Length: 184
Image 1 (cartoon, rainbow, N blue to C red):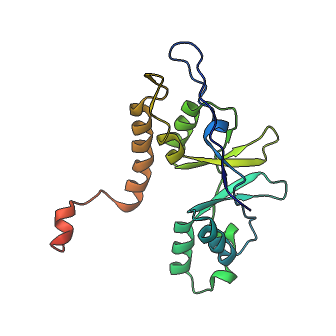
Image 2: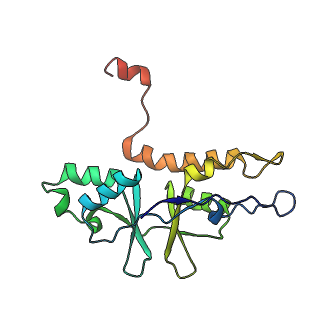
């Protein structure tokens, strides 16, 4: 299943308006797994496509969760089982937020900040998986367009800060890099 990056064109709705739509920035034809997929198969897909997360879909191709390389690593260190014996639904994050192809990127940033996630599955009008959009996809397009900014940098940075709060809550505050070199 090849990954295809669909880079679209920019549009404008008057001054300050935006047509930065998800469909112009997202990656389509993404790899996906079912809840009964083994961690071995999931890890193989991640390695093959050089990705760190994969949407989990139901039999109707609707996203029901996400699984990350971190989820896999934690499961393997906490269980006395082979990756082939652990299923995705045992370790995935369920209740995943999604966005639509025609959603404005500002809405996506709001969802990412609220949910404290870096990636959102993109769905069609039936709720079926169409692709995925990441904060990286958005960052790469927060640039000057025709002399004006299509997406303000501060909006992207604010979203990144909100996402980072989640990781800091899990891992604790960042330590001074100098203290690491002294063993502290």
